[in-house]
Length: 502
Ligand code: RVP
Image (tube, rainbow, N blue to C red; front, side):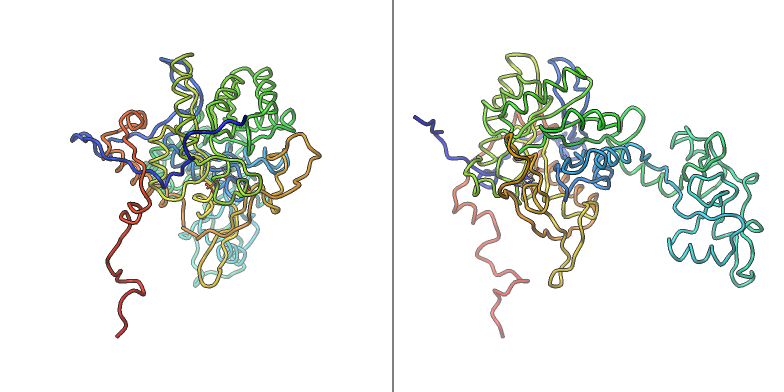
């Protein structure tokens, strides 16, 4: 006979946190949101951690290179989507790794024989007033000089004037050699009262500019998630079909962590993928697996060698798997059961395998609930799709700005590998939709607001670390009538249509 779970499966909105005692040390500025990303042994430290417990979903409409940089800057991580060619995905990873915070490739370049007229046109086009003058007019040509807005006066100079006659020539420039650190570059900027410092290689080819203003903004990101070489940490999705060719290229491109992207992870395909990666690379390559929604699924992936396990089937905002196939489980129930299995596994084996709650986060308070229920970190799609940094179009729909957001199982993404069960290599039916989400502006502002709510609630629960939150949290189910009590009720909202008309 089939197995029946005793409890119905529940979602985040059916729970609330009951505050605990908070002492005077419990203030948001004392809260640490640092959390393990990959498994570790008792008494040891994980090789990779996150500074904030947020990762962006492995989706075409969410995790491209801009998202990866912006999220790593805040302390989180993106998994670059795998539903693209191996070459394109590896190139995206490589570009994130090549990006050096504060080191900006020059985007306005001219040759010395060009004229003031060319310079004015370029400034109008790009909007930048620092222009590199290189032998071939490219961003990495031999640096011959620099023009800033202080070097030319359109009212007094003819438009035919060659740039060579008014640029600051290389001999008079203050520059630094490639390899200089950002803080050393900043010291040079201060010593010489510069706005811009060119960085050149041993053959005097221009590599980057460091701008005074960028160093200041770099200092505003104390949580940046960086590797030992001060590059952003980035993840990449893989599938259980082409991993033998995809994984080596992603590793070659510098991916720091991988994750098998699958709608249902309790399968031999995942075990084969994990076994192959571990046989090739040992512990040097970290790879997460999933998604599962119960204890059995967790234990299977833990024993198959997963470095973290992703929890969630059918709760994603664009996901219609539950309606289409009748599989899935309420996200809160799934998470609570898997967190318990993780803790028991740790107790039994001394190995802590972090779990990621994937999908279904609608309100900021859901993030805190998920963390309190035992998630080590959270994967979000809809949340990040709304920001400037997601790869999709910002469009005006009936007077409001929206961003496009589509599921990996939608007809638009056609990510058949995510749903494949050894079939014929095509998406036979859709499990996701194509949608709009309200545009919400820059990632930084939104993430900081969400985190401030999380840290504030944690303090209400008497916790200044995520571990402490999980130990101390008291959660209660809510009745449908108490949910009504939780919103504004029995008042006439001033900006609503409820007020009586004159
Ligand atoms: P959400 O944050 O609620 O938008 O959910 C994002 C998650 O939804 C993804 O991380 C993934 O697990 C799942 N997803 C992605 N595509 C689809 C689909 O087309 N069904 N589902």
